Image (cartoon, rainbow, N blue to C red; front, side):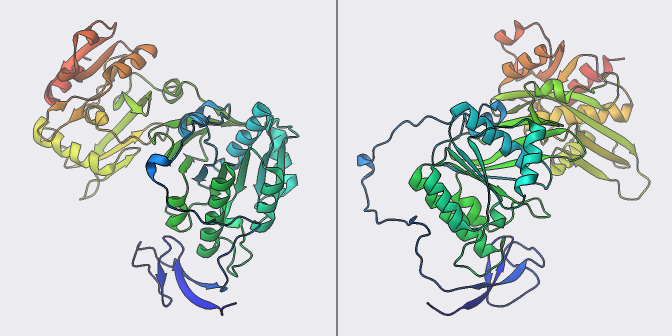
Length: 458
């Protein structure tokens, strides 16, 4: 066995340095470079899982088979994964502490165990059997096919996978796992990298899907080296706020489906509940006669959701006016405010402007531009939007309202929620759209949109 070696690794990005330093030059993080002592060892397998010798194969000679995805029975989870879990896939799910990752995966494990009547192995390195049982009892989970295994040593976990051959394995969490050939502490860069790499070999060789739970850093990124995100097939992020009941599951990476889908849940006493109609959920507290409030239909993957954009414009008490945005890019809001001043003559230089997407939804598509502008003007003039009116459209730097995609789906969702009017770009209006029951307010410029919406509301 070779001797021990000493190196310094950034726990944020995995960059290696010859000596200890305060800041990582690669990712810019402070106090993230730590000492890693790795025991020299042969690159051999644990419990018989080793990368065998494979000869190069012509692509024309590779045979493919259509494998059925494993449905979890939880529609919002299946939507984000692309229609279900692909056999042999490695999935990484991250989220803030206490957001509900363990609750979600316990529900997924129980659903698969009951729906497919197959064994599911839930490996917990952070909670005891008693703690898992308390959560399962609260959620009404009782299944003989759901096996809970409190273990952190990877060799023991691989042994159980070999023996049980479960339909699904959940590792909660990857930062607690220990590779017996590495002397570093659990959660270190070396441990996370080696454990994730070996689990990838296991799922690809055996065809057993594995879900890894990953911690997040203070900046909100999934902890550990970036290589962990590179080797997995899907990266899911479970987000929301602890003080609110809603949770959103979105895909940051998905080799087997779209990354544009989102799943919406609410946290209740008995666990997570799916939200089948997100528009109704996000508009449940919408006040139609309030200034600075605009409803916009946004597209997330194959789903159209109505969200409420609120703006508050107040006189600034300081020399430098504040610009704050939640749920939309603040740089985009700054550009739109400049367009409002230059093209629509709105004096906003001495006012604080705050923009918020109600419910904590993150929206980053150009179709919300017109909604942001009208919400700001509505608050500035203290004039509410006309009743039952939606707004959609992209704003150019010249003040023009540009066309958007999937207008019919947006209009269909507006009609479903009882809206009677929609302000939209004239370039999107076709003969098919005119046949809808909703009134179309066609606009070409930002000034025209202000005239047809806010002026007509008085």
